[in-house]
Length: 457
Image 1 (cartoon, rainbow, N blue to C red):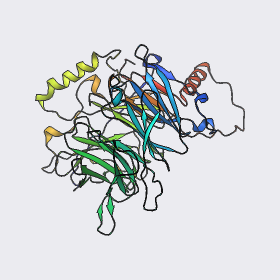
Image 2 (cartoon, helix red, strand yellow; image 1 turned 90 degrees about the horizontal axis):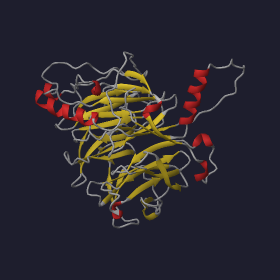
Image 3 (cartoon, rainbow, N blue to C red; image 1 turned 30 degrees about the vertical axis):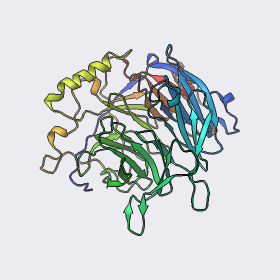
């Protein structure tokens, strides 16, 4: 695909501070639920995922464990149901896409780990039901770095070394179909080791996307598992970056990608024959650690955390056609009538980040080669559709997830490896406000918090 003449959208962040009324609940770390001898500094949460019905939450931690929580409807707090201890690193988790807590037969999830089979678990009590084992030619277990169910929920896709291994959900064991992602002799496919897989849940495009640690993204046809296109490289980078997350927009028109050691989240319009890079969002992310982003259930916002404890919300308005004004107003009214949601006031502080090997995005040019003016992303003149940056803590926010049932509920996880060096000189006593802030920041370590980011600040 051709990457020339790309139109991009950049954003200016409006900063504000998080107040206690935005925090609904804090799930503090409980080391009694773990059986490992891993040090406490390595017990931080590194990912969370809500169930499709919004009633449960899965989390993974750096101490090789997975937690299953239930969301209490009365107080919107998390209740621990099961702690699942793995023998090695947990790579990925995936919910059954048609899960409904009213139908126990649909309540399960899959977990993959290093040098382990993919486990299928009961979402009510957390017991393992069965396993799916990807293996190599020498009959060794092959690690599945990323997993996901297809839209029909009858197949489980797993990304292994330069291949996609597809299991039938109804047939556990070691029988699978293999799709090669790269043929070196023919120089066909997407080079590199696969890193992430994501399905278009809207079924509009009929695609699923597979990325690699070499920075390539391939689009595959869900009906026959054949690759139909390769997305162009982002204009923001002087060299390829490993991709750590993929996500389709709610309408299936756009695909977003997060990159290793990069401040950028890139978005493409995949509706045309040649994909166009039209989104470019910035947040501090110059780290090898994965910083997970998410799109809200209405499809109007993309939210992500950052290394410095900032929570960012970026608008995803995609048309400036006057015929869509009523539609936009309807979505704004929908958000404004949700519990505890009010108009967000913003300040005039600006936040900009730039890595040494990253370049500024080109400004949109009004020529015949750019996308149609009616399809250009814009920021609507509404307080609810302004890009916002919220200072939550000084801890790294490594995962952000909107609840699919309650759009104003968001789960955040904090943590990264910290090494405390001894102080050579005694410091003066801190002021009372600084001490209180430090206590608040410490309370977020190794925790999951539930917040309402749309509440008035």
